[in-house]
Each structure stands twice: as structure tokens, then as C-alpha cells.
Image (cartoon, rainbow, N blue to C red; front, side, top):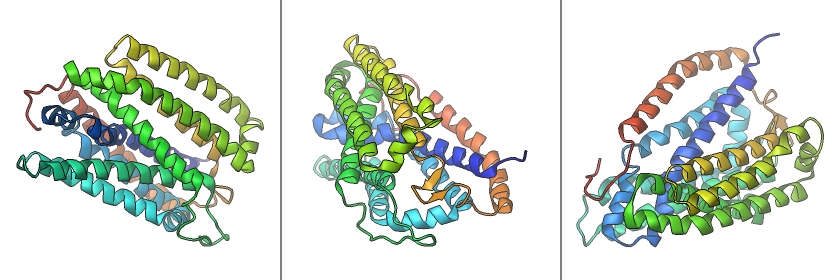
Length: 335
């Protein structure tokens, strides 16, 4: 039996996107939480917790997009055309957020509020757009067998918009638990207080999406409730409930690192449910990963470079987080 390059590439792309959601999710979440923290020194600390690592986090988004282009060019072309507006909006949000990171600390007291607004607005826009794009993808892409056959506003419907709101709450929860782990004192207490309702809202939205998806999309319902997918899917809801309960207890006992790790587990469970729902389609309901794949020679050539660069990305990511581990305090400067 030969090596299935399409499955390997699907795994690499899914891994890259998962890493992006985890790593860029908490710094986008910090931007979403900014309006609930008014003191300048606390806002400085919030940004300093991610200042050394935020731009490296987006490497994973580039890896996922480049991998999709190299390994599944048909899906790349169709998805970018179908979701062009939310994806461009996401990039605009990331640009505003990135510029705000650099200029906020150099701004005068009189003008700093503009960069705070850019940081908040960019974080909210990027997060909401990612959720809308994900919801639009799950909802389905119109495809005539060769090209995208829908309209540029197909994503503008209740389910994708709800997914956008759900991702705002999810990233906010990631951000609050990251700050619990990285800060102390009054700011940490405020994050404990915010994490409790955020956890409940995220669990409610996971339940809503889990009910909405099979009811609105019979093809996904069939995947969930037929063998062998049913055996893979059955543990997911139970594990989500157990993780949510453990998260609420960890916050109640004011643990530092456990809440963030439990939110990561919660996101992984949601991501695994998404994977089970879609597999093996890459254009939902129309095209599998094998049908969308580029020639084996192209996949193999790109894989050689990817397998060389992927360990480097993992090592420098791990090293940067190791170097800047520990609590961030008001006396620490901008990195």
C-alpha cells in the first residue's frame, strides 16, 4: 500500500489551522476583552503577555493557507471565491490589530485611545470574520463540479453569523484564561470573574451549533449517526460536558494554569467534532480530499519542504514561549 499524500496533507492543514486557532485565539481574545479593562497599566500588562509571541502565532495561518494552495488547489480556488468577503475582512482586522500592537506603546496619552480602539476593532473584526467563514463553510459551498456557482453573499445568513458571535465568546474565553495564567492581582481577579459567565456562554453556543448543524444539514446528520463515524462522535458531547464542568471548578478554586489548558481541551473537542462532520470532504457535500488533490508529484515536492520547515516552526514557537514564560507584571516593559 502506497503513502496517501492527500491524507498527510489534510492532516498538516488541519494541524496548522488548529495551532492558529489556539495561539492566535488568545491574543485576539485579549483585544475582545479590552473594553472590560479601563486602567492603562492593566491594558499594558494584557498586551505585554502576548507582545513577544503574537506575530509568530500567525505563522500557522500562513502554513494552512499555503498548504491548501499546494495540495488542494481546487478547494483553494472555490473556498477563496465563496468566502472572499469574510476572509478579506479578517485580514483587514489582523492588520489593524498588528499596527495597534506596535504604535500603542509609542503613542502619547492623548492619542493612545485611537490605538486601543484599533486593537479592539481589529480583534473583533478578525474573530467575527473567522467565525463567519467557518459557518459559511459548514453551511455548504455552491459548486457546479468545476467552479463556485453561488453568490458573494451566500455566507450572509443566520448560521454563519451565529458562528461569528460564538467565536467571539470562544476567543474571549481563551483570552481570559490566558490572562489568569499570565497575570496576578486585581487584573487576574477580574479575569476570574469574566471567565465564569464566558464559560457558560461558550457551552451554550457549542450546544446550539451542535443542534443546529445536523438539523439544518441532513448530510452532516447522516455522517454523525451512521457507522463508523458514530463511534468517533459519541464521546465528544460527554467529554465537552466533563471539560466544561472541570473548567468551572478550576475557576472556582482559582487555579492558574488549569483553566487555560481546559479551554484548549474544549476547543480541541469542538475541532474534532468539526473534523468528524466534514471528513473526507474538503468542499462539503461535493468534493473529497482525493478529488481536489493536486498531482502526486506536486504534493510530494511541497511535502519535502513542509516536513523540513515544520520542525523549525515548532522549535522556535516552543522556544519563544519558554523564554517568555511566567507572570507578567506592571513593572515589566514592552518586549
